[in-house]
Length: 218
Ligand code: DX5
Ligand code: ZN
Image 1 (cartoon, rainbow, N blue to C red):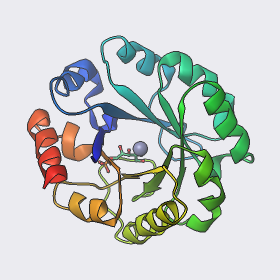
Image 2: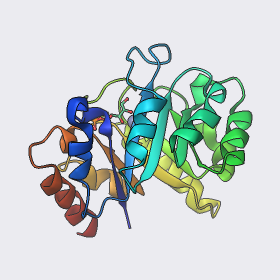
Image 3: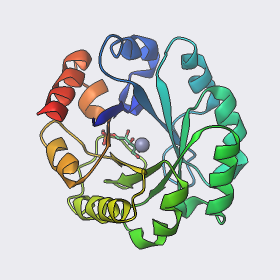
């Protein structure tokens, strides 16, 4: 079953918990938490305090996407704040294996991701050691951008490698996903769908979530 990971970047932070309450009694099991440092990407979002503040009121899997330089510096803090999975960027560290080990040692799932222009074959050696590969379908940094069509090719590329090598690694896609294009990323082989502005920037958050799950079932 495909899962939805709504991105809280598109929430209204002045009433973050009210927006998150709209995920309650829906089929959503996880939320996507985008951390940006203003160096790896040109934008700054939020840090540990927001994550630990929402941890107590939300019984969801915290899918944390780090868009920060040298993520190895902060893995323990994200664990303490309440993250369940850390996805970090291949381009953000000199030692990918070290970051994978650190995340595992802190009992979190490991995700690895790449910017749209990075050669996907560079990440293949790591797929056996991670839980999730995230295909960025926009340049990381901002919500509300348009889906890059060439992402479909990268999703297919990872799907083929994972299946050919009998791996259990999941594929997630992030950026520009809407109810009208989600079907094609599922058909290309995605297991998890991140969607921000098409959920939390909508008036009917609950209704949007339901629409996604109806498409997943169709
Ligand atoms: C972008 C972030 C995304 C963002 C997606 O750098 O990684 O998770 O919140 O937002 P939408 O779905 O609006 O493209
Ligand atoms: Zn993200």
